[in-house]
Image 1 (tube, protein in one colour):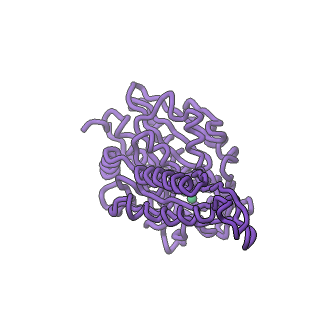
Image 2 (cartoon, helix red, strand yellow):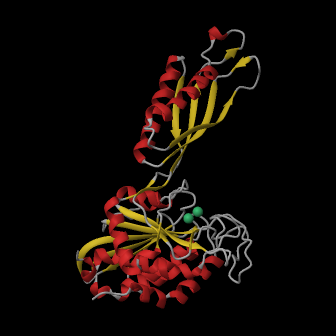
Image 3 (tube, rainbow, N blue to C red):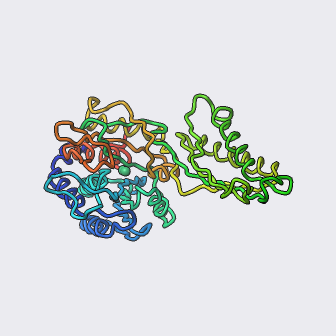
Length: 397
Ligand SMILES: [Zn+2]
Ligand SMILES: [Zn+2]
């Protein structure tokens, strides 16, 4: 049996639009997605799935058991809105001032529920399991980790992880599916230098943390140009330096903060390791002590080569090659990266930008909106991508 996922998705277009508009009217911020989670759980239970709620505080997991054994495929959709005041004038704008689905996560949820419905309808043809993961708090970067710590990747452990993001910079209906790094990892860091202050005229009785800080800042600049390969991309910026109160007092401490941006985990790890060595080594040489503290951050989002090829092949078969655009690469960050770091997978972009409809504002803009005509394309692509792993007829070859 071969299923026409385009037909299946189109049949659910109106339902996706209705659900999405409901979520859009009721946006909820990170870790507060209780109404959203409740609606999702109701839909999944209606599809006869085993449902877990409260995973990573407000996350929801639905497990679709196939008729026979096989691999487990995870489909992830994020649920949270942003603290943005909506400026659209559509009939379905946010009913909560100051909160808005300005990134399209309302659409991600509606599409994932349609995919769940399509696959549940064909449960008899499924050999394996599909784990639908509705994640909180993507916008603050720690919802995925919260779910992982709550065991979302256990029992059963997924073999493949898939996700999508609507993209206003891409024309409606186009798909951007690329292997390797597609979104940047972002790390914020703090450096604390402990010296021993004293009189500005008697430096020999102090251990001056200001001079140590100056040396550390300059030495950190060598990491990108001496340790990172010229063929890789990396940024290391010290953006904040705080020390001292008076012109004639050497302070006890210096505090600094900055950011690392990278496309590859290895480069990020290299930056962290080199920064740590430089910071502690120079401080010690200057008679001070220093520490590097990494703040909650997002690792680079890297698509698995093999899975991406498989997804491309399945999407092409279901939707044709003319849908495929050049892969999107962006410095934006996404915590789907944490799932992809543990489970090989693919995160792809579905175009929702339509200048005539005004749905091409950037993500997070108060006038951001989704072109709802992109929904069936997204649902068909995701359903086809999942089906190749778990549907008997579609798994061959
Ligand atoms: Zn966003
Ligand atoms: Zn987003």
